[in-house]
Amino acid sequence: VQLVESGGGLVQAGGSLRLSCVVSGRTFSSLAMGWFRQAPGKEREFAAAISWNGDSAYYADSVKGRFTISRDNAKNTVYLRMNNLKPDDTAVYYCAAGGLQQVRATPAYWGQGTQVTVAS
Image (cartoon, rainbow, N blue to C red; front, side):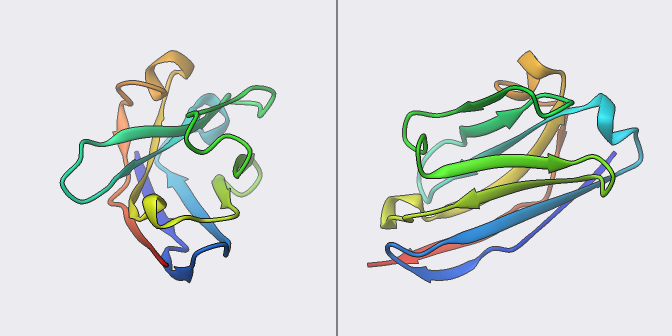
C-alpha cells in the first residue's frame, strides 16, 4: 500500500491549507484513513481519522472545530482541510491507513509526510 501526501506549505496564522493523500495498492474503500502530525522535538500525534465510508470522523481536541477530514473513494483520496491555522500547528503531517480503531493509534500504513509551517 502506498500513501502519497501533498498540499503542505507555508501559511500565515489564521490561514488555511488542504492536504491530500492518494492511496494505491489496496482497495481504498476498505480502509479507514487518518492524519497524524509531528512537530519538531515532539512525538507524532493523532490529528483526525475517518471511517471507510466517511460516516464517522474523529478529531484530536487540539484541532476540533478547525480541521475537517473527508474522503473521495472514487479518487482514492483522503483530505484534511485545515482552517484558522496557528503556529502550534507547524509539523510534518502524515497520512495513515488501517482499520478504524487501528488508524487512530497504530496505523498499518504510513505516507512519507508533508511539511506544514504556520508563520505568526
